[in-house]
Amino acid sequence: MRRSELQTPALLVDETRFERNVGRMNARLARLRVPLRPHLKTVKNIELARRMLAGHPGGATVSTLAEADHFFDAGIDDLLYAVGIAPGKIEDVARRIGRGMNLTLVLDHPETARAVADAARRLDVPFRVLLEVDADGQRAGFRPDDPGLIESARRLERGGALPAGVMVHAGGSYACRDRAGLVEIAKQERDVAVAAAGALREAGFEAPVVSAGSTPTALFADDLAGVTEVRAGVYAFMDLVMAGLGVCEIDEIAVSVLTEVIGHRRAPGEVLIDAGWMALSRDRGTAGQAVDRGYGVVCDDAGRVLAPEVIVRATHQEHGLLARRDGEPLDLAGFPIGRRLRILPNHACATAGQFERMWWIDAGAASIEPLDRCRGW
Image (cartoon, rainbow, N blue to C red):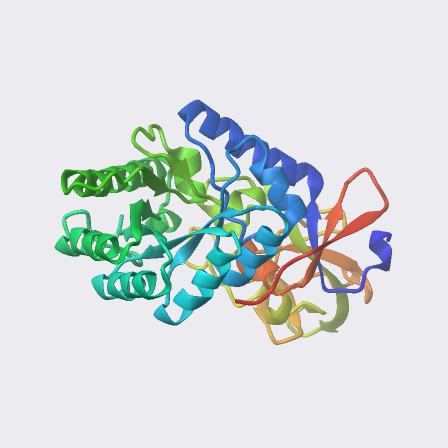
């Protein structure tokens, strides 16, 4: 299919930018001598997953059981389900393990450890578990000195499950404002993970796995000594939040939403497009950054940012409103009805999650290729 034949809104992935982003992460981790366990929740597609896995041991990270099924069916059987396991899903996990899926679980509470241990004993399934550790108070996890860390490991072991190590995600990296901050939180993430693994080993557990990572910390870490694997996912697409952190440049963002001009608001000098929050998501990740880019930055059909900068100022379910970021009215003559534009998203995972299919584009080719995405939980 030719790009001009696509119905809008449509999710586009730029091949050149994608490959460059993947190469950058690979080179960084090669210097740090740590393997990558790529997080596939951003791409949700086997062809792109294989490009991200190339040159690494082959394990991947997922955030839903639907993703685990999708990638296992395509031959990726070493999977980390990196969301605290809900007790109601444990039997579903056991059935997947029974089919040959090497699925590792995550938990951060002794009562969850009890539920997993009870299920391991009842179902005779030796669940493999990482204990989640809190690096920055942003989300989930034990502190390294929390007695519940060791208590949970013991509960798991008594039930026949395997406490295989620790996992940490420094979500606070997304609030950093400069390179020094990113370097520091990457160090903090590593130190907390290594300390928690050390506490488990002192208590008699082998804890061979020390899993850390996010895209910002992976790309700005100076030293990952003691870490056995890095998890990151958005690096392959990048987005405006990453650009606002200084992790990438805007022209390195590989994902965009193709849209079409459908109307004008003459008094305020704004433009209506057929991509609202159902296409772009409600994510406002740049609102707390130095530059607020609304719901996305507007590019021409070739992917070049419009000057002066135009953003998606507001969204309705199926409508987006374009405006200049400096507040001046748009020259509506430059936005005729039917003009095609591309929107760079705030959060690649959230925007891509709105679509069942994306389109693989090569800047030098007129044709495009469809890539299906898995959906569901």
